[in-house]
View 1 (cartoon, rainbow, N blue to C red):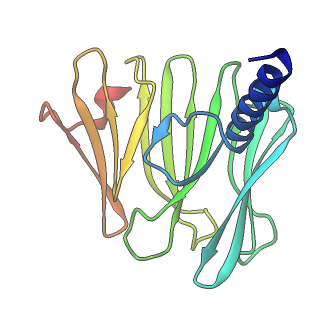
View 2 (cartoon, rainbow, N blue to C red; view 1 turned 120 degrees about the vertical axis):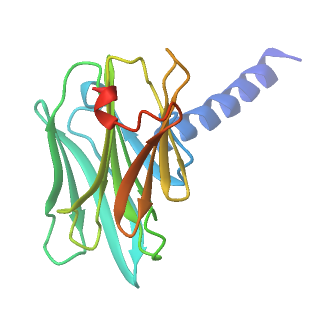
Length: 190
């Protein structure tokens, strides 16, 4: 293969890789179809967004950095750009914003997750309330848990130290907690 063809192939491969990265980096919450990742330390004040149809109305969910603060806002529901999530980020924090129907009612909920040096948290917000109602919060600190998985109405984290599965499942708009070691206390993860 001559140099010109090699550069062309590398250019195509690089552009394909860049397209994937610009859409979203590898998610640390697996099993989601509609999401984006956001790293405030490297993306600064960039605005990332996704659109979702809610009962025939288009809703746009944005994440943006302002100084050392991350804000997630919505457009298209009741108010103009209500803040649904706000947090001061630390160096190394990365965020994932997604929509997923945990309740099974055909209307997706908003998932906002943050992964830092030794913590992972996933929050599920009710889209119908403009994100003001927290339906579930899954938090791990100091256990080396680096990712979560979503399947249907459940969020699961696996602890690499003891291989215990921690699962939160949505039943009638409320998340129940179970662990594979039957200790069933989410504060064990804090």
